[in-house]
Structures are given as C-alpha cells and as structure tokens.
Amino acid sequence: MNNFLLLDLLSMYNSKKARGEKMIVKLQEDSMEKVMKYVKKQPALNLFIIGDLENFGFTHDFQELWGDLDEEGNLQGVLLRYRNSFIPYSEGEHDIAGFAKIIETFDGPLAFSGCEEVIERYEPFIGHLMGRKTRTYFCQCTKDSFVPCHDGKVEIQRADLGMIDDVTDLLETIEEFSLRPDIRESNRHRIESGTGRTYFIAENGKPISSASTTAENTNSAMVMAVCTANEARGKGYASRIVSKLASDLLKEGRVPCLFYDNPVAGKIYKAIGFRDIGKWTMYR
Image (cartoon, rainbow, N blue to C red; front, top):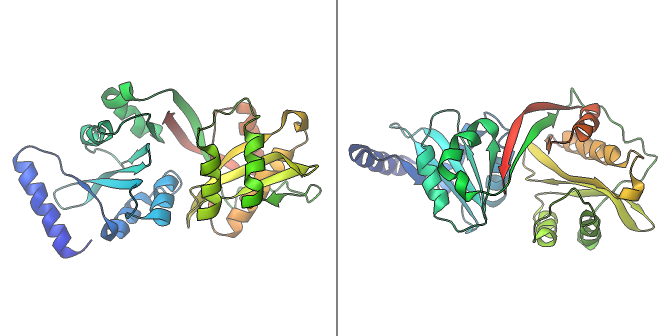
C-alpha cells in the first residue's frame, strides 16, 4: 500500500471513528502484498482467497475484497466475494456486523463459507439469508505424510477441453453430488483459466472415475469432485486418482487440500496421507 493511499485510509478511519463507525474499505491492487502477508499465515485455510487473488486480482467485476482496518491501517479481517460466494477470514476480533451488511446488499442465492470458528460468529447476523448448512472436515497432505498408491496398473489421464464435458456427464450420474446449474461452464473455465485440472480413468473411451482441483495457487490446491461410477466402485480407482493428483501437486510445490464429511471417504484420504487441520462450514 503506498503512503498516500494509507494516509487517505487513515484519515477516513479517523473521521469514521469520530462518528462511531467501523473502518471497512474496499481493497485495490496496491493492497495485494499486505493482504497476502495476512492470509498466508494460514495458507491452507485461506487457499480460496489466495487462489482467487492470484488468478483474478482486483480488476474483475465478479470479484471484490474488503478489509477491516485498525487505527494504524493493519488488517483485522478480510471478506472476499467471488461471484455469488463470500468467504470471510480473521485472526480474531473484526467488524462482523459491517461485513454482514455488505453481504446483505447482494441478491441471492448466495453462498457463504469459511473455517468453522469464523462462520459461526456470522450466523446471528446473516443466517436468515443462507441456505442449507454443511459442516465438513478440512484436511491437507504434505510431502512428509504422503503415501502413494497410484501403481501404474491403471492409466490415469488429464482431461483437456475436449474431454471435460464427458467428465461432467459422469458427475451428473453421481447421486451423492448436488451440482451447480453452471457446472459445465465452471468445469470448462477451470481448465481454460488454469485454476484447476481434472484427472480421470476411462473405460471404453468414457470416464468412469475422476477427481479435480480448483483454486490452484502457488502454495496449494483444493481437491474436489472425487467420484466413481456405481458399476466401477470397489476397485480403488478414486484412491489412485487422488494419489496421482496429490503426487503431481506436491512435486509442483503445492499442498493438496480437501473437504470430506463421509467417514468412509475420510479413511481413503487418510490412507493417502491427508490429515485433518480444521473444520469448514458452508451455506448454500
């Protein structure tokens, strides 16, 4: 943040403080270093914020970032909007009511997520705006914990734009999934933008098992949409794909992370080397 902007923000803060108002400002590109220093104290838990800022910055209309500043201009909390999805983060006390008012200005349907300790504090303010609540375990796999199980006996391919619709066809057959209406557009966008990848195992030219990443950044990536067609389950395909994904990400210096709420899935991930680091709450 340059000195002139900081002086302007502090002047604004002092003015608002005198009127008993909180200091929340919309952050711009010159705040990047300050924000990254703040959120990278917990890089895994903040992988969505880090990934979205690295990949899209502050210049797109579908993404915005607000900061809660103290008297010295230090961040006390941040709130990210990516399309209709909001993620808050704070190390402790911050202006929850102020961030909640920002969220209230957007028309639904909205998504709201973050580490459990932060999200629970927002529920009295915006719980009435949100849909179904889901609580999941949040885990990561490191080089020290990783246990490979992709043995090369089954071919694992990386999907390109020509194959991603076939993978989406598979996802649409999985009863456990509740897919977004724009899932096809979203899957193609991840491939085109380089913010994610999809690995799959095929049979007769069609994907029968797959796993993807999203929010890839310099430090980490979120593993998602792990699935296997009903008729192909029980053969260890999902384990092999997630193992291959984790291996490739770790070689690139990225820590793979994922959510799970199914104990059976949790055992599979832990056998590969994923370890719980917290809980993640989502409202959709």
